[in-house]
Image 1: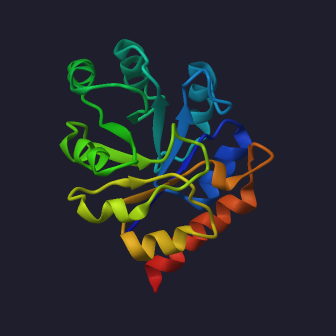
Image 2: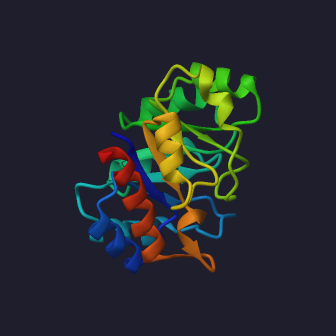
Length: 203
């Protein structure tokens, strides 16, 4: 069964929509340069509103491991998603600070990127296009050679996610810009995305 992650939530109404839709994961973006950035304080408040059955993922770009670990230990997030240039040494350092799961994101441009994702020491990997949140898809044929479960991201929307699930059978699908209107999460698009994944799963 393909899991669902709705990323870049930043308002109480986004959390209310997620609680109604029951995705497996939601994401808070802690990268200051992102337009979806939320402060640790805002995220903590939103987390209190989140259904406990939904796991919260924190998205970081080259953040200090100590800062990431603090949010994991506080319960603001359950999983750290690393979206910068973090390497195996960084992951090892973060693991020494917290036993919580670590996800590493990879930009998919060539077979080399698949090999890097395959070799990652993170608990899970996310395969994306560009720097993340760009709304563009990568060449899915690259995925033929990957031998570990993965979160599929990059250019997914209610219109194409069913096809992605049918063709690729990813462990999870991750969406952000594909469920937005004018830069804000759109409850109807969120619902349509979740419905498209679940429709594919039941057929």
